[in-house]
Length: 217
Image (cartoon, rainbow, N blue to C red):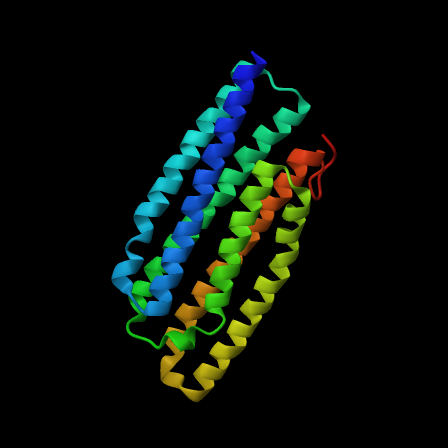
């Protein structure tokens, strides 16, 4: 019985990795479309978001099956319940990548250099998502803590983006709408970082039984 349960836990890990990879792909495609000024390429994000939504449903079904059929002990229960929490954040990451792609369609032609720190924010967001899922699979609280700490860098980049856009509007008032669209995109990247932090915090819970702001389990 335990062998079957362990196999299903390994399946859960594989599915989490696949969902994480889809999130990374959605962010990367949206970021490249933004930097290239390619609204057509941005249209590739929506189908990936659809795959992320399906993967969320599949993982949720697997977790519920594990809970109902296997009666897991405390450590395994934490891993399964953490996965259920994590996929909610991962689904939101997919949604936000799709939101970025939708805005790109309204930007029109622009100079990639005008995107400023957004490219760095995109790279940081992808790294945080990758590392948070890896931390879950490896049960690595040090890596999870590094993801949480890295959020400060994303916040710093967002503030830099705001300053750059304020300067852009001051120099070119006619670019106000364009600047606001870029600010919204930057905000979505910041939120993706926040979701990666949430995932990392659930990794810490899965391993230690302690979640930020919650009691021990």
